[in-house]
Length: 227
Ligand SMILES: *[C@@H]1O[C@H](CO)[C@@H](O)[C@H](O)[C@H]1NC(C)=O
Ligand SMILES: *[C@@H]1O[C@H](CO)[C@@H](O)[C@H](O)[C@H]1NC(C)=O
Ligand SMILES: *[C@@H]1O[C@H](CO)[C@@H](O)[C@H](O)[C@H]1NC(C)=O
Ligand SMILES: *[C@@H]1O[C@H](CO)[C@@H](O)[C@H](O)[C@H]1NC(C)=O
Ligand SMILES: *[C@@H]1O[C@H](CO)[C@@H](O)[C@H](O)[C@H]1NC(C)=O
Ligand SMILES: *[C@@H]1O[C@H](CO)[C@@H](O)[C@H](O)[C@H]1NC(C)=O
Image 1 (cartoon, helix red, strand yellow):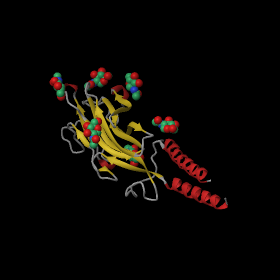
Image 2 (cartoon, helix red, strand yellow; image 1 turned 60 degrees about the horizontal axis):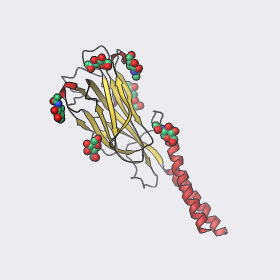
Image 3 (cartoon, helix red, strand yellow; image 1 turned 120 degrees about the horizontal axis):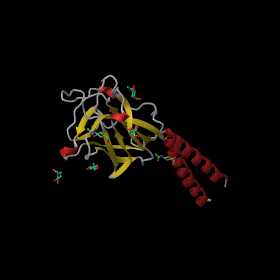
Image 4 (cartoon, helix red, strand yellow; image 1 turned 45 degrees about the vertical axis):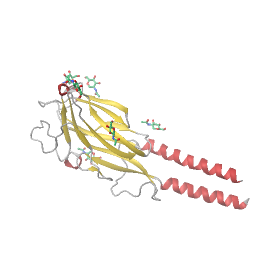
């Protein structure tokens, strides 16, 4: 009996330390440089310009864009074509940031975006008209924030609505993934920073507790069976 108790507490201890070693980390997908972990660049569907774009009417400030770059496209409903961005990531959350244009330029400034994850429409469509804009460019505007995903590979697409004229100025995306200090979840990333300031940490904590409880449940079952 005593021996069983010892095993029980040793198992519990190692399970708890594993649980707390499992950690949430953050990676970025820059419009130009791509994924900070995998270096994979997003795929742009349709015609996109960027920082160096003589025909682009919208000229954000490079010093205010993430890593000084963005990707710009205008989709015209009359073109009968698709415009969007596609990339894959492995993680439990994803937030995409765009730049909004000012309302005093002679250009298409309406935004109309929808989002697809693993073949399903997700999030709320992001729609902005001139009445929603200001006379300044707006940076770091979250257009979609997906949470509570499984820590597996996901296929994300941002699509410009093809029934109206719409612009998109994509700056970057942030995703969070589970990584364990024991190195079982894909090793240590090379480029991570402090937790996101986007308010999704509550959900992440829940996820972690769920994981711990599951392990605890398994351990208890094992103990009861061996008793
Ligand atoms: C946008 O957010 C990033 C990351 O939090 C920050 O480094 C940058 O200064 C912000 N840019 C602006 C213009 O607020
Ligand atoms: C739009 O494109 C689809 C296929 O890409 C084609 O079947 C359709 O005829 C096109 N419509 C117009 C009005 O050109
Ligand atoms: C954008 O403006 C329209 C018209 O004023 C308004 O109905 C809508 O709620 C606004 N959307 C946002 C996100 O502010
Ligand atoms: C994520 O899950 C937590 C707990 O299960 C829940 O409180 C939260 O609302 C969820 N977030 C989203 C965006 O579904
Ligand atoms: C990702 O999804 C899009 C459709 O939303 C599809 O065209 C593409 O082939 C998918 N990519 C992968 C690698 O499965
Ligand atoms: C922008 O959106 C408004 C409101 O939906 C619409 O009246 C206007 O025609 C749109 N402009 C363009 C260029 O699509």
